[in-house]
Every structure is written in C-alpha cells, then in structure tokens.
Image (cartoon, rainbow, N blue to C red; front, side):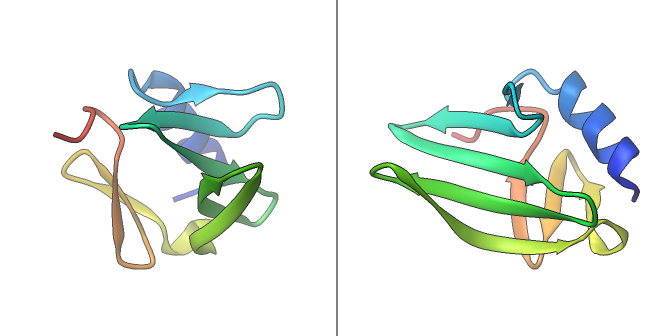
Length: 84
C-alpha cells in the first residue's frame, strides 16, 4: 500500500475525519484515536490528557486494508464501520 492509497481510503471512510494537519481522527467511547500520516510511515495513536501516545506504527509498504480494517503491526483498526 502507498501513502496515496491509504489517504484515499481514509477520506472515503465514514468514521475517520481528516484534521487540518492531514491526519485522521476518531472519537469512540470517550477515547480519541489518530492515524498520523507521515512521509514514510503511519502511526496509530491514542490521546491521554493533552498528549498523543503511539500504539503502533509501520511503513506504508507493510500496511494493508483487509476485511474493512486497517492492519498495522498486528492491530486491526476499523475503517468502514464504527466498532461495537
């Protein structure tokens, strides 16, 4: 997967919203999540207080969307529907 393909998929997602910095954010059950789009990699982060903490990150070539979920370093992150 390339950066362009990932950004296009996230822009089509009904649950992830692009912020002014080009990253994608989601709030679920009071917790804020972010997919930080970087030049060579993507980071999956959650917010605690005012700080963002990295949960997983990987290069775009190792990232894939499978069964409506983004797979990053073993994490399966919903892209198409909000988790239950």
